[in-house]
Amino acid sequence: MQTATPQHDEQNTARPRIDMGELAAHAEGPALVDAVTTGARVTLRWDDDTQAHFPWLWLRDHCACVECRHPLTRERLFIPLDDIETPPAARVVDGNLLLSWADDHVSRFDPVWLHQRRLENAAFTPAQIVPPRRPWHVGFTPERVSHNDFMEEEGDGERQWLEALLRDGLVLLDDGPLVEEEVSRLAGRIGPMRATNFGARFDVRSKPNPNNAAYTPIALALHTDLPNWRQPPDIQLLYCLQNEAEGGESTFADGFTVAEILRQESPEHFRILSETPIDFRFQDEEHDIAIRAPIIELDEDGRPLEIRFNNWIRDTLRLPLHDVDAWYAAYRHFWQLLHDPRHQIEFALAPGQMIAFDNRRVLHGRRAFDPNTGKRHLQGTYLDLDLLESRLRVLSRQR
Ligand code: OGA
Ligand code: ZN
Ligand code: ZN
Image 1 (cartoon, rainbow, N blue to C red):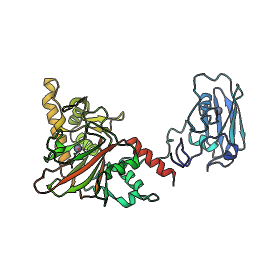
Image 2 (image 1 turned 180 degrees about the vertical axis):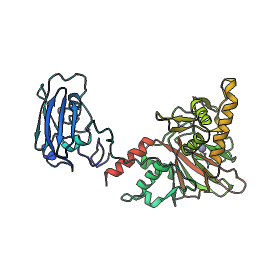
Image 3 (image 1 turned 180 degrees about the horizontal axis):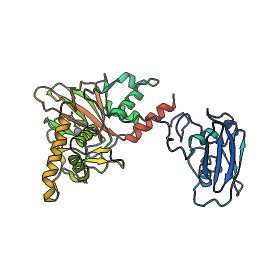
Image 4 (image 1 turned 120 degrees about the vertical axis):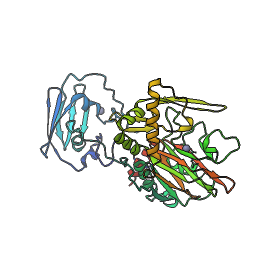
């Protein structure tokens, strides 16, 4: 458990509380001057000349008293099942809105909290702690954070690392110790490792009986891991312990940015890859994990939400005969754009470095290496994006 007070609301904004002592200290903002109950609404006016209407049930639903929110967890207890037929009496008391309901329940609201949540003010969104995504430009290089700075309890390194990863989809950690399982320790700072059919923590090296191309010395073209899962892992961590073999350089590309370039160059190719589900499948002795999904999944606004791209676990192409040629042309176009030196970055991981990336946005690959010239050993794991965002919110809370 964290020692800081959990906030079920965004930072630095007031929220309704029952404690009048706490309410006495209002957050900075306009004062409430007037509250009147009109047909099915409470109409409020503040001293900055704004006015807003709140439906009765909305207000009742957001009451923060100990009956309506659990006093310890602060989670909602009230369930909005019944319409409110009788108007509440609305008054401004000590600057707060005080509502007395027909069943004798009393709700108090902070005026600034209500001002921020005016339903007429559709632009209101909770304070942005998670940075928005920033597309890579030509010449992009990942932000670097030293292992020391990341580990420092009072420092800013972990926060910087999280922000870069959420913003750019890729961040490099430098100068870590050359000890096994360091990747698990680093992951543990953020949250539990996301286990897959390759385990919670996996070793990437050339193995005698490989069940995966990564466990051979061959080149890996740009790909996302585990697109054959309904929910592929969000974040991948790859910690370099040894990289003495010739070759083995890492490659990355911002799949969302390149998908947008594809859309500009060929709306039709973009449409095909975003609208045509294809099969992905992984099989070994113990598993047969398969899903049918498009290469580019879009959100409700038509923006890329997820890239599934992994040529070696693409299954039989099961499409209507007349769609096949066009699908290959679209796939080839996206492939070429991704691997274009303008969009693909390349560098060799040094022992003690860890690369972390958003596996559903950023594609990764590696050059072939020659295991006869030296050892190459990475340890990897996956994390859920929710826990990265959570960690960033918690670190912001302690500021
Ligand atoms: C992987 C992978 C890259 C590398 O394990 O999924 O892509 O550099 N490895 O070996
Ligand atoms: Zn209440
Ligand atoms: Zn991979």
